[in-house]
Image (cartoon, rainbow, N blue to C red; front, side):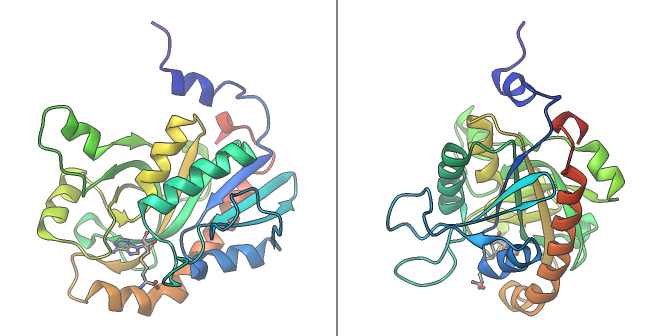
Length: 259
Ligand code: SAH
């Protein structure tokens, strides 16, 4: 039997060095340190439809052409456009416009101490799934969970000594009891609001995607999530930015099959 279509396309040119990477980051606070580190500049003629808040920053680093897309601020409310809808839309539009070789979704996440996570930990994700898409009908249940593998990066993981974890995605920052049991069923160590949506689009359009998540708050701890998140956001995004830099410098000059 032929290999599943996605796999075929993903390794279609395994020997060609990666030249074009797409970084997707949901929040401005998370994105700006990366923008500054790589001296990226905002594209005044963004390839996106007129009027959308999505921002493209771009630049080069060694042999890499770097595109960082931030979904921008909600046009009505002025807060970061976090969550699955915005991240799926920008992933789709950016793949169409920029034809990346690899996607990196980087961001903060809640971590479960019962699964070994602590504030400031950086994880590379092995699998993504959703925890708030409950459709209790056979097969639709699996569609709702939407379990997908991230692109496997054994050499990167080993070289950078990254912790590996499963990620669970939902559209809420807080965690209901029902969410918590779904996250447990997903065997996830970290939870965010974008990863599985980016994975869905990346798989549809057959682009390898990796996920780097930094823990800002402990979901099964005693501090209120929003408070803990805001308290740790600055220091954890600094750590995330260092991790993204290491990942990008590892990627430089390599083919996807060498990751
Ligand atoms: N009050 C914040 C809200 C950001 S939402 C603000 O605007 O400053 C949280 C963002 O961080 C999302 O992009 C999500 O992916 C990530 N995140 C961090 N901790 C999380 C958690 N415990 N659960 C879900 N997402 C979390």
